[in-house]
Amino acid sequence: MSIEFGVYDRNVKPGQERTHSMPNDDGTTSYYTFKHNLQTSVPQRHAVRFQRIPSFEVRHPRGDVLPLIPSEHPLQVKPNQVKLKDGQTVAALEELTQAALYSRALLFPGGSKLKSNASRDSILKFLKGLAPNADRLGNAGDLGEDDPELAMSGDELGELLDGKFGDD
View 1 (cartoon, one colour):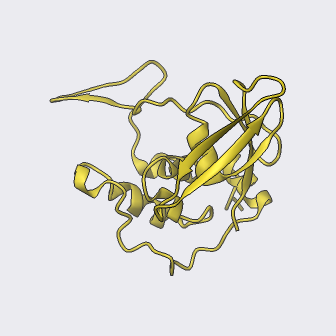
View 2 (tube, rainbow, N blue to C red):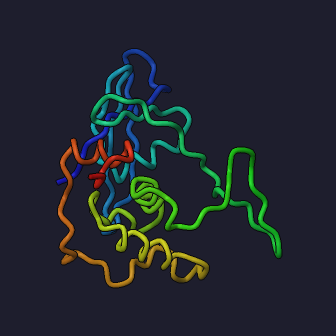
View 3 (cartoon, rainbow, N blue to C red):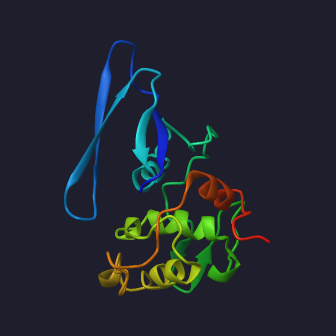
């Protein structure tokens, strides 16, 4: 089960519509048609990609507007140097919340293979498998269709995004 997010294309003029395509990991393409001031339901794996485009507004199923995700890689790396932008810091993967890890995984090829309630270890395994070799980009190791992770309910996803999931 996929959680559906509401997406608005703010470039659509009254009386018009625009269709955008998103590639799927299986090689197929999904198409989404946007109308003026009307929300289009988009699965989370694609909504996070629209979230990187300033002319789109992405809403969580609860109705919260999600912030724009910067389109450039968060770290600008040069030989022997890491340059951070204002408001950025270096953090170990283990320091990030499960929601932050999952959001980042969805930005990479193969990331949508992870279920929304994938274990922290599965997400970390995927992210660690991305770097630093370009030929391994998107390789999710042995994560696959038979991964036992099950879909998460909307309430559980909301808790995850609020940083409360799994707190006792």
